[in-house]
Each structure stands twice: as structure tokens, then as C-alpha cells.
Length: 600
Image (cartoon, rainbow, N blue to C red):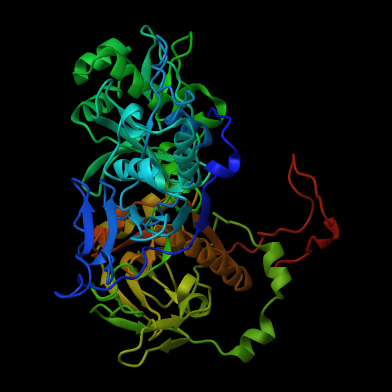
């Protein structure tokens, strides 16, 4: 940004972040007969009518309100735009007008307010308030040509020469400083050369978002990154990537065609011809997509970074996307316990209704008998391991009953009073985020003394097994998949299938519901391991299962309840021990004296 000799005090905007959304306003214009003509509200083309949100004047002309066009309120849109991209978006030449890009250089993006941003001018004074979905900022002084420029920007993206038309050098610097203060409310629009036509709008989704456009030569080979993907969002096609801290809104049909063509490597000429864009506009769009990270240039060997770079090669697309969406930092959508469906959809009950079928009560241990024979927690932790071989003697229904009771029974049930906003919750032996307890257990029995082979549902309130499926072929299908997960090493006595009632979590949580379910599954696994170890059983958690097949066998709707984990149980061989020296290639570290001589 080029400065002038104008004293800083004359151009420095006074900015104040109000930390609040749009100011509260009366719901209707001034009544007839009130002093003055009432408020004036200007709504940009394509934007929703602000309706009653317009402030009301009771004396003199009301404030003028400009609403930025674009998508609806995006929630966490208050992200910080790039310093580099921000500077590129508004080049200065000391008031002489923007300098066209040199031959082969990409045109800079121009600033545009993100969807839902409003520019409010008071009817008195020289204050402008820029109001975003989650924050607002008041700046001053704003008058004359500066006020006019902000008004033009509120109506949509403009070429720089139009945005800054009529501004003196100092006024232009003043506008740029205002935009710098409000960069968390700005996106970057790539325009077709010589027009107002917006091809792509790059919206920051993280506070530290930054990029610089990269020049793309006519003979370069370009392709979408292996991690980029398109989806529909708020009525528009967007390009996203877990590697990129921007969202590319493909506002123009040509940009959408170009994005599709980038699925295969190509040169700018071919890609532009497919999209119907001129050469300069094509290279401009590609320069910004490459600079942001959505697209890649092939190296001299024809390789692309997302395929060749060692760290990226070891990330699967869906793993990296999942990681980027379940932690805050590089995503701006609503996140956490926000109850997105309260008032529209009834929540799932804290306790699943017990399915119909013959039932069998299970053994209930007492605290006293467990205390008499249980190993210490340290012993259980230190001797815990995965065991895939089993003893000749089958495990018993008594052992299975104690295992399920100590692992997954419902200990208590809280029902809120009518009209309360509190959640219906339960308590179980393992922890669960928000006491959601969405996990359910199904027990498939091959051999268990005192229990017939079959597929059962575990009723955690009644502490009983309910028969769901007697088909031997279905049992063997479940066991085969479980054995395959161990390299066909294990042939267990019992398979515990862990399912999740997904809407129990997604009714309350946005963005993290499924991730939290997987965390719960891990917590449950450890509880199962420790209890099985204390009982002298052979436990083994599995890393894979067939959710489609288990849903069919268990009679479940895949989208409402399906498997997220599997756990093997069996009797333990008498000679199975963790005592003695470790096997070949192992050496004891960190307090080898903790090695326990006997099994629990």
C-alpha cells in the first residue's frame, strides 16, 4: 500500500470493534406524522430484504443501510483475510488509479463484503458501522467520497477503478485502512478482465487465512489438488479443501465449468476453452486457485505436490477432511453444542426402547464380591493386552453378565420437568460427552456356557439379553468379518458389536457429533479391556467391521443406528501370561520393575 505525504492524523480511521451483531432497532418505520421522512433502507441486488432490521429514525433522515449481496448468514464468518491477499485486493498508485497487471501477471482480487455484512451510516455525525454475523466494527471519520466508496462496496464487487473513483490519494488510503481494520468481514473477488462479472469469491474460513496469487504460464499443467472437493452450500457450488483456509464460491457458470475441467490435468488454454473464458480471465482464476491451494502446478517431472510430497502422500483425503472439520481453527461453520434441531425435531430418548424378542436375565454381581477378588486398577492396566487365542473351556454366561453389567449398564436416568430446557440423560460406567450415551451393544454368541448361540441385544436398564436373530449364517458372517480384522487369527467365543444412535448426538452437536461418537467408542473399548482383564478373559478390540452387513443382520437403519466398533471376548488359556522377559526385539523401558509376575 502506497502512502502519501498527508499527515497520518488526517487519514487514520478511528475504529472500534463493538463485538456485537447488528444494533437492535425498532421493528417498524416511524409512524406517519413523526418528524422527518423516516429511515431509508437500500438493499443490494441479490440480497435478502433486511425487513424490520432497518434502524428507524425519529428525527431527521434515517440512516442509510447497504446490505452486501451473497449467501445468507454463514455463522462464524468473522475470519481474518490475508494480509497479502488483502494488499493485493486494493493496490494503490498514489491516487493515479490502479496499475493494470504486467503481461503474464495475474490481476489482483478486489475486496467484497462477505454475505450478511451491512454498512450502516448514522443520520448524524461521521460514523460508519460495519456489521457482520458475529461481530461489528465502528469507524470514523467517514464522510463525503469515503462514505460513497463504502456504499459502492456494500452493493457488490467492483473493479478497483470504480471502487476508488473520485477519491483523493489521502481518501483512498483512508478507505484502504478501513478495509484493513474490517478484513475479517471481507472476501476476495476475482473478476473477469474489464468487467464487474464475479467469477470466483474467496471467503476466509480461518482468522489467519493468507495467500498470494501465483502466476500460471500458458504452457503450465494445472490440476485440482487431491484434497479439493466441490459441494453445494447455501444454494451455491463451493470449492473447499482441508489444506486451504478459504472457501471458493464458484459464482459464475464459467468458473464451475473450469473447476470441473481441473479434475484432469490441463493447460490454461484447454481449460479456458472448456469453460468459455478468455485467456487472461482463465489465468487470473487459476492464479488465485493455485495461490490459495485449491489447484496445483505440475513440477518439471509432471508430478503434483498432493501426490508426491511425503507428508501429504500419507494423508487420505477423507482423514484430513475429517481432521480439519472436527477441530476449530480452519472452518467457520457453527460448531459444538448448539442444539441445531431444537424445536424442529424431537430428540431421541436417552434410553433406547427395547426391541421385541425372547429375553434372558443376566447375572448381577455385587460390589462386595467384586472387591474380594478383583485385581487392583494398576494390575489391570499393566496386564491389559489384546489376546486373539482362546482356551478350550468356553466362557460362561455368568462372566458375560458381569462383564456387561460393569461395562455398560444404565446406572441412573434423569428426566427433566415439562417445559425445562435441560436434556434427558443417563449415567453409565464409562464417560460420555454431554451424557449423550448413544452407544448400544449387541452380543453374538458362538459358545458360552449357559447361553444358546444367537445374536442378542443388550438391554442396559433391565440387564438382560434380547434375542434378535437366530440364523447361523448371519452369526458366521459377523464372526468371519471379525476374524478377518485380525488376519483370520481369532475365532472368538463372543463378539460384541458397538452401534451408535447417531441422532442422539447430532440433535445437540454440530460438526463434532460423529467425532464424539468415535471418542466414546475408544473410551468404551478401554473400559471393556480393563473389565475383561479383571475377569481373566481374553479381550481384543477391532479396528474395522462391516457396518452395512451388521445393520442388515441386526435389523437396523444404517443412517439411524449402525456399528462403530467391535470387541472380541473369549476364555483365556491357562498358560497365557504377561510374566517373564519380553519377546525378541523388545526391551523393557520406564520402570521394568513394574512387570507383574502373575496374571490377575
